[in-house]
Length: 327
Image (cartoon, rainbow, N blue to C red; front, side):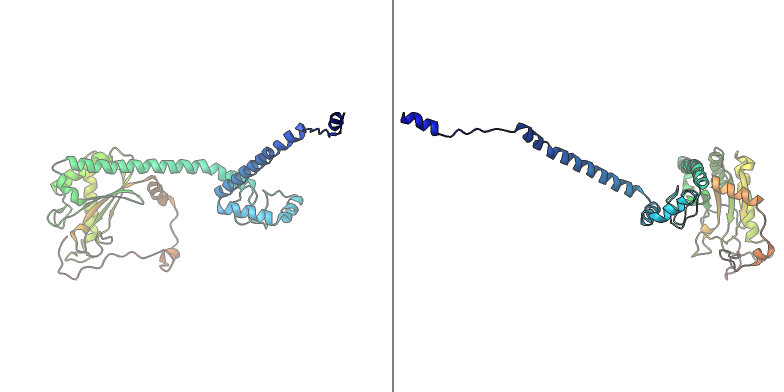
């Protein structure tokens, strides 16, 4: 009996597990982590977008959020944000504008100009490649010709603003022309005709320039001088190019510059100052040349005003103090 009473007095403990609450708590961290990841993605996306904007666009956005009421009032008065001249910098359809807003027509016009500008840039790059190929071709022809290979030291080929410039310079013991005349030496004639074959394959127009050193003629600058000599030598070079097959209409300008543009400015009597320059003009130089023929001439007052900014008088180089000789 005593044993049975002891068993009856022992407490009974019942443990109940709340499975539903435990399962709910176990998934809460996943939702929080997903929200955190989403927020970080949005943050990095915002940083990337801000980094891809220009300085003007960022300034326009900052000005918009710094004065939202002004923008609201401006739109409420009947004028749209993209078709007004607001006191708020930037905004509208083009945030790159630092002063006021622009009209929708201006935006459409700028968009229409983008394909044309891209086309011009692509054409300029293609033309640059053609001129570089021409440079390589001329150098290769000179290297492959045993008779002209010795003249490689007298050939200068480089890119300038107007296009590709091919210069043939004199050497002390190997001049291009007879002394004091425009008679072409035989090796100079062969070199010009070799170059003409490569130039004939290009549609570009040409400019020929003749240069001399600072040696003055005994008759002075009033008679037959370096100006006439440089012009005659440039024109003689043109005749040799045409005789080798270059179309006559390909040359649009022949200039005699005497010693006004020295190859060696430190030594006006250097034989290398005597040279012929052939400029293969790019499209921009050609358009500028033909446009100058149709532009109205400047007024006499503007031409006489030598104090205008960017205008410098052009004068021939001073004659040398040495005894007069002939180039």
